[in-house]
Length: 513
Ligand code: HEM
Image: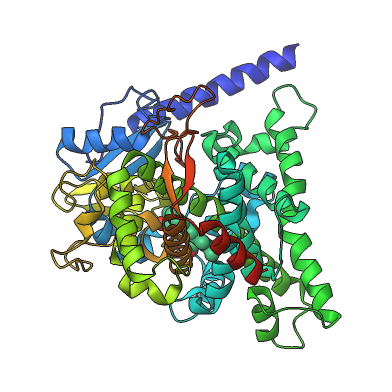
């Protein structure tokens, strides 16, 4: 008992010392933001939902494109303009390309292999270099046949069970990545697809859950799983099994197939054959390759699904924009065949609608948080080393000067009077993040989106569904408020556009199987 009392005094003493040190630390001129409480800072101001909207309002209210809040000694800076994002993330790469290290994600749940979260160091550089070789603009056309196949397999699913469109799109996006990465030909419901979906869901769950106490007090990672309040450790242990299996199982299966001479060309095959024959079996190299291949699925699948679901919501809400794109598809592609990648130059309206869907509501409105590696100054304000620095893509893509009437869904903003793509309205690149950490899968993603949008609008009109009584089911512009933000569930109907659609769809799906 006496020991416990002494321990109590000791901990209380430590807490007071920490609080006094925090209170007495030198005051710096941070970027403006809401005034916080002593010690606790802005802990009660930091928005947990739709934070991009709150940060956008603060930027206006405080008249600064970079704003600052502090919670329990942690500094958070939010960059709300394209100019500041360019200057900081792109212009000062040695400062702003690091990532915050989460104990929950990286140490407890097996996500250490997700190099999207790795620090800005040589290990990350090696991943980035290898990934870029296979996903740069010159490399991605090799994937077009597989992407086209996946999109053409989506069409009969939408025709037969349109009500399940979200599940079908998830299948299309996931299966195309598994095909490109491991040459896996998966059908809906395939256990290999289920495995990666289940593992990927854990990262969404953790990220959307907000802050874990163990990330604030890392020593908690040592408490035993049976301890009261250690639910996070029990969850982490469960997640780790799935996450490890997601990284290891398809990769090891592919290596087995390669040994048996049955491997098909894909990203994993290219990595393995590129490696020096003597070193292919080193555990270090296997770790890097597993990290590269598994992360492609996690980073690329759900983001693409969200972008496509957002596009579908926009089509249901704006039938006139849909008809505008369909007029182009009928004129360029006709009704005797399906669109192809080669049609892209002649389909600027399809590209415009894709860009507008990404701009209107990006899947990651705050991209992913970066971390300042050293102290810095911006516009006379101090940004301390260790700050979390977020690019507010939502604010940048709703800047009225660049995108007038920015809340409206208006694909023609990207088109000239002659109907070509304008080069004075920027591609909404902030959707893919910032600086050296900008999404390296973006060229592949844009190709998938183009193909999917062109195919869907060529054969279907996406419209409001009707209920059992024949009444139209209304749809609202409503998105989930967390980090990965997608349209809240809505109903849509996929109406075949012309007689003969069904034959076209089934023939193409057969051809590509
Ligand atoms: C519409 C689809 C996509 C969106 C909106 C998207 C968005 C993003 C964003 C916002 C980041 C973080 C950038 C930053 O930290 O500043 C990122 C990183 C990343 N993305 Fe994507 N992405 C998409 C598709 C893909 C695809 C298809 C792949 C793979 C084929 C991919 C692979 C990655 C990887 C590996 C990273 C980590 C890069 C690094 O840390 O250096 N993404 N993506």
